[in-house]
Image (cartoon, rainbow, N blue to C red; front, top):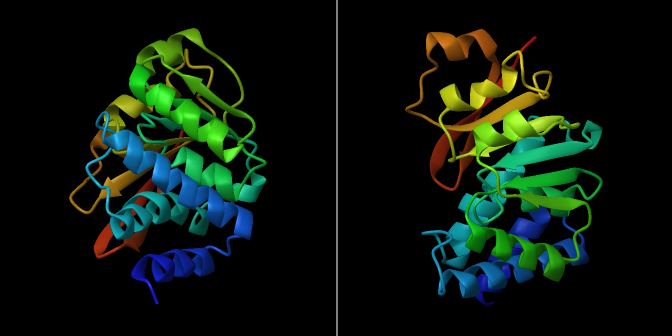
Length: 207
């Protein structure tokens, strides 16, 4: 049996994917690898690593956060769409905002959203500080996966922020240690494994 088929089937079984969702992830992978030849989206391109370190890493959040209770999510520094798009595929009821300053990556994300037939996904090309200063709305959870340092992300809880009551989820490496400022907002951490690497989620909230 072909290795690629086995990898996809294991991924589908682990996440209880429907046939439609599996097809969406497979198309997503094709778009990612094709576009990556034109401009740099990710250093990870082989199918086994993409499934483990992009798709499964994004979806691991569902083990620690009740995604079905959410209505909205913002992916900060979305890049190739991780974790926002994988989470959207699994939880189509969640409104997703992809925050990405690179216009080429925005164009890629728009293509993915269109090709996968995803609804209620918006793109925003503002940088993080400008976004906090100039926008407002309902966002339950902000996700940051290898984008900004937590100290910068914590601006979301400032008094002038329209999102100060939201939850912030930071994908952290084993080497990360919370500063005194970060500890003030740190509510919990959850260790998990992705591929052969140990990582953990840091959950921040103002109150």
